[in-house]
Structure formats: C-alpha cells, structure tokens
Image 1: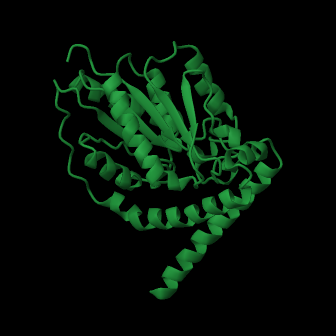
Image 2: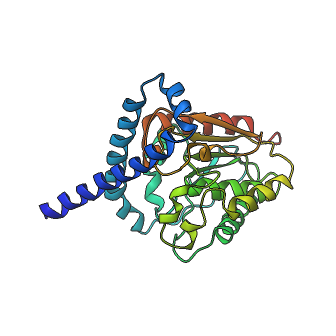
Image 3: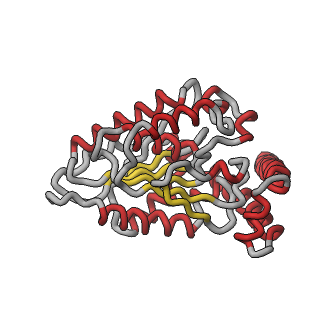
Length: 289
C-alpha cells in the first residue's frame, strides 16, 4: 500500500514539475515575464516556487477528494420560489467532477448561502457547444422554478467557459452574475496534450474561441457582473494573456501566486467568491421581491 501512495506522490510532483517547466519556458520567452515581474515586485522565482508547491498540494487534494464525486448525491430540493436568496451554480473543469467544489460549498454554507446546485458533466465523448447548451437549459429551468431569485454562476477552468457561453446565450434575466476561476478565456497551448475531443478543442485561439467571441459580439453586453480571477503563475493556461477574457464588460483580477487547480482550494479565492456572491446577489435582487 505504501508503494502505491509513494508512486502517486511521485506522479503528482512530476506533473507539477513538468507543467511549471512549460510555464517558465513560455513566460520567460514572452510578455508574461514583465507582467510577472511587476505583479511580484521582482520576486519572480519565489512566486513560481509558491505556484509549484500549491500545485503539489492541490493535486493531492483533488486526488483524495475525487472519489467523493462518485457517491450518489441526494436529489436537490427544488429552489424555493418567492425568496430573493441567491442560487449558486458551480461548474467544474475538464476531467473533474462535483467534488471540485467541496471546499467552496462549505465556505458558502458557513456564510449563510444554502442553495448550491453544482452542475456536472462528463469530459469524455462530449463537445463544448452541446455541453454549453445543456447548461443553458438547466439554468433556464432553474429560473422558471424561482424567477425572483438571482442565479450566480461560478466556473473553474473549462467550467468557466461553459458558464460564459451559457450566460451569454440564456434568456434575458436568467443569469445574474458569472465568475470564472483560472479559465482559459483564449485557450491554452497545453491543450495539444489533452485527452479527448473536448480537451483538444481548447487550443490557444482555436476555432472554438472565435465562435464564442463571435456569438458574444452579436449580443448586447450583459447587465450583470462578469468577473474573471486568475493566477499569474497558472501552470495550465499558456500563454499568460490567455487567462484574460475579451470584452469590456469583464472585470479581471489577478490573485496571489497559486497553481491552476489550487484556485479550487486557496483561502483567498474562497473568500473572494463568497464576497462576490453576497455582493452580486444584493445588486441583482428582483425589485418585485
């Protein structure tokens, strides 16, 4: 049993090391290095090491908690109509499951936010647009069942892209806010190593992102808040500028140094998400409530 644990730790450390080698090569040979120097106030090596350490810790956490996503979950009660409390819909990233948000769910419930409806999907034999349409339909069903309640999307990585698409295409009034965590808003060069059609479609500035931007440009800018959080030492989204969403309606914020997966567990991110949910739900309460 011990050798299995040791092998898993070795794989996790190796994965973190390899992805940060790619990160450093890409960043050191592009405009991202100057941005990193500015954000870190010259402490570039320290920030990259912190990202690497967070990558190891976060991957171990993801592996340990991943089986929790296989446990059948009790069917969620229908949202209460007539209330103005927010409905939070977390959307996980590629190859993950609903266990991705166990830390966030706990933080939200401690803050008094109880209606949390994670939306999950399979990363295999799926295409982005079909998944995005399914999410949009899910959100519109939720909205019809509780029209007075703000629906707030929180998406990590690919989940943020699905949330972005659904927020742009859902019927007006369905979504009241969209927050993304480490999402590849312009794709990633590492997508060439992805397994499966869905992952490979996320290439840097690929056709998928041209389609998504074209769709958004044909629609009026949303009136609800759209916020993107990203780490300047994200080891999965390359180049660094691919983390920045297009469109003037997006607010973009850098976090402290952490890895891509660590955005699911880092206390700073959890605090920001809880605060954003409270602010967005207050700003978007129905005047008819």
